[in-house]
Length: 353
Image (cartoon, rainbow, N blue to C red; front, side, top):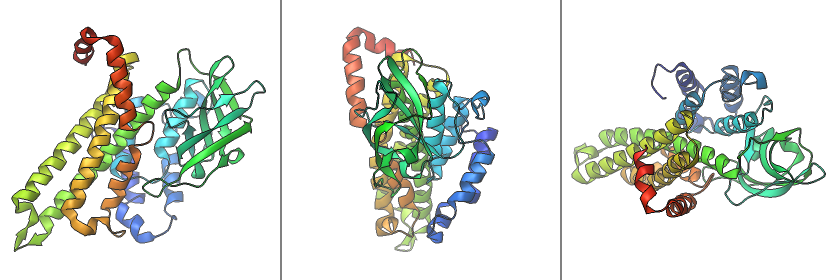
């Protein structure tokens, strides 16, 4: 999924390297880099990679999109590429065409709910919608009188409250008050918010794993360059121990996220997909906490400064823990499902992977 010969991922990585270099963004102290970056991404067809050509997209497969998402995490990308990918994917489930421009999707929290009322308008209030303040459209999963529906609304029609994520990116409460959808269609049979949350959890897990992968590279490089008592600090046993722990956390996150992405790309459904998505979000969330602490401990105070690139990766990894369900939510969901299946079904479920 992320191998160099994958032309889609290679194209995305090249764009990120050329137009979204973390150190260059810090030094620019402006948002002027965002417009040319988004233009390049759009020209390559990446934001709508999960939308069929018949619906206005690029018609890429899930595996390619997952590779792009992980590469975006490695670059600590600060534009709504993952959100637009997810929004386009959601619209495609109902056969709706995806508009050009930035998008996000709602709801993004397990207990939030949007309702399609009898008059055909959308109503409800949702929290922590990533990049809602920057999005032109919002893809919505709503409960209607006759079942679940998928809709597209203009972000300008909604009331978007100020708010920021841990990484100082838009994370907004959005209020839908009698909002007429620009397009709407029934969701596929059996669709519900749980499936949307699972897909969002896999995407965020890949982003976390990617960000931690870069944080590990930055930390190892710093430990080999930083000299104390006439030798690199990487030569000290305590630092080596921390670097080994950091590498272990990153490897665990990459393995869990990659396994979940592979399962989704192969078309896994039901408990098999739930197990993968939940395990990935739980393990990647835990890794974000532990790995970020170790990386900053190795760097000392310098890693927290606004001039250093490390915080761009660790703050995003930590912030992504909460989107589409915190690890405590997924632990409860997974535990409940295992308990409902019974002890005799646990090992067959695990062994099937």
